[in-house]
Image (cartoon, rainbow, N blue to C red; front, side, top):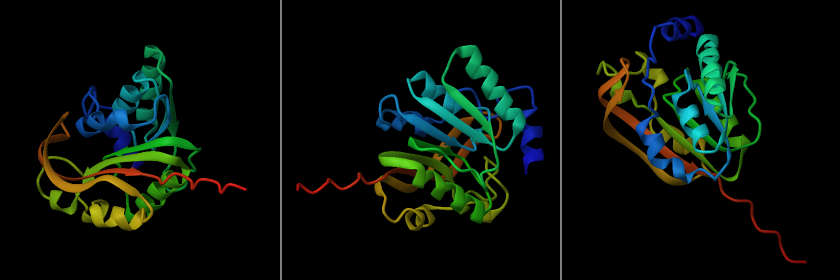
Length: 205
């Protein structure tokens, strides 16, 4: 998988476009002001750069070293607070953060569930997890996503993975994507905005 992604990011363009994901951009103001954010499978970093430009400090993780190098160079050139890390999400241990974003972060089920849960556990109380991904209904459409049904998932998996979450939004829907050559056209997606419950107030003594 890593070699495949390095080949893709070696193409001479931003393979998912330069603009941030439209859903992420629409809910970005829900992240805590100036928060520490974590991006999973962030690739060339279009979303990380967008959020950093809004005043957040961002850690962006991806297994493809080429994409990570591209993101690091762009962040440095634009003077944006993005730390780009090359790491495999199957064993990555995130530091404490105020928000998480996972935009089309598709992996094998055990890796996906472990990575998402580790990110959730790193969230501060009141922190936000924003996600958009393809559901199994996307298979065969030709408008984006992996060709393996086990890499696709829906709302039921997310609800089971985060049983304590307060869901501002959790839905499956169809959207028209315009995100470069690889995400283009009508697509079946799941969208989530999940808030980690705040710690209970201390009892008065």
